[in-house]
Length: 138
Image 1 (tube, rainbow, N blue to C red):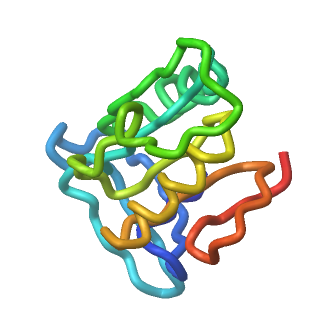
Image 2: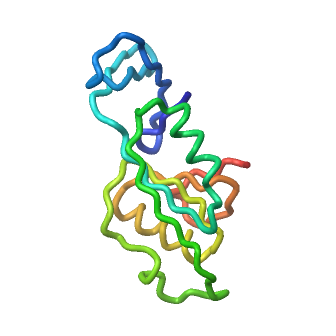
């Protein structure tokens, strides 16, 4: 399993059996071995349950390593949203943001908020104009 701690940092997480519950796991980065002592806070934004399978996978395979905060937007949206503050708030704290939103205006503004806050974003399968989000193919 891989963890993105910040842009440019990737490390493999290995959960060690028999560790006390306050030791969440170990990060191995090159020849450095770092023990995680707190959960990684992940903010997940989804539209019409678009991230449910990923959320269940994180819960199932993350084994309690992550503190998930899930925001679901399930109302019909107009084709163009000039002011996304009705749907997005900049008042959040996270180590990582996962963008499963379908509306391009929401994804764009989310990326700008995260860029300002220096929080990495993973927006799988999207074509975003900014350079802050990681957009791996689906």
